[in-house]
Length: 451
Image 1 (cartoon, rainbow, N blue to C red):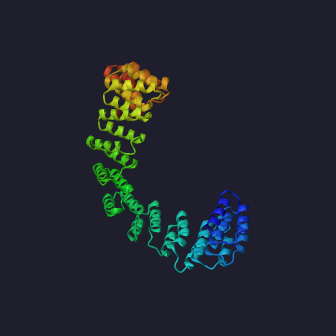
Image 2 (cartoon, rainbow, N blue to C red):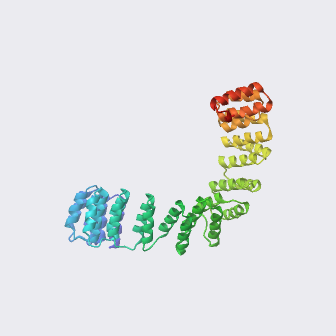
Image 3 (tube, helix red, strand yellow):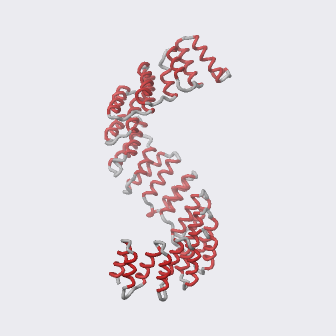
């Protein structure tokens, strides 16, 4: 019989339905699986007339065949024909479940619900299609009603209802369901840890995390780490990461994303970097850039430079972070050299890089170079300066030059521009242009204290 069924399935898989039927008709013996293979071949392809004729040939059809016919009509969008089959069936629980699913799929939730209420002890399998249909329609109250009909200690329906409440920000209801759950899977635990942290209940989140015991998985560690990080508790975030490593839980990308963002000192960052170098995430560009950004933020140019050179496939963000980092940390010559190297490699600089370079020029008093970067942005790279770029360069110029820059700006000068221009004129003792700036400021902000 196994060989017969395998041959029949081979015909069907290769799209030879007529050959399969001929083979089926010629078989001396057939079992329930034989009948269901052939019947399913018709129903799954929407050939319901052929399926109906074959079904009529079955003497005392098994439950599987009734279910296949009902599911076939439901799939074809004919729930009433499915109901005709149902009424003629022996009324097995699986047949009821298939019919409830058919009505639920067609959108007739009222009839499906009525059938659930007519069942004496509806199983999870029978109720789940209607339960999920109500959830999908946003009818949480009706979903809860169907849920109450289920006789179950399985986690899945409980978790599904819990997630539905959380998705709709019904936190108090979610807490009630979680408390009543006879068994909790890691999905439910992790969802509630996240929910408590989002509501600022970080201690409750930690209690749940500790209560998971052996059920804790990688997502659990990531969730509680993110909870502490979200609540601004960087030190605790690192402690969780450390505890994770000590328990031989291998961090993934999300683990590193969270802990890198939370590092507040070079010692912690160095330890995270060491774990990162041993991880499977070593070549992840996003993480390498974040690690680079972390060391730049913490002021370690040496470590940042090492990380930058270790990145095999650098992208614009990699170059931008390093050039900007060097420029803002006073390593102007190194920043210029790296920028030139970047351009030679065919990577076009972005606005962030130019803003850093112009700002560095302002700090060093390099007037000509600052203005040169401003011109080069548009002329050579089609990168358009932002207000901050103009303000940085303006502070380097003499009053007449600053006036020319002000008049060449592609947008109307605002209060900050005129205020900067006023400072340039006052420092140079240019009374005429000082008066022009003051008039503009009074026009923008008539109250005397504005200037």
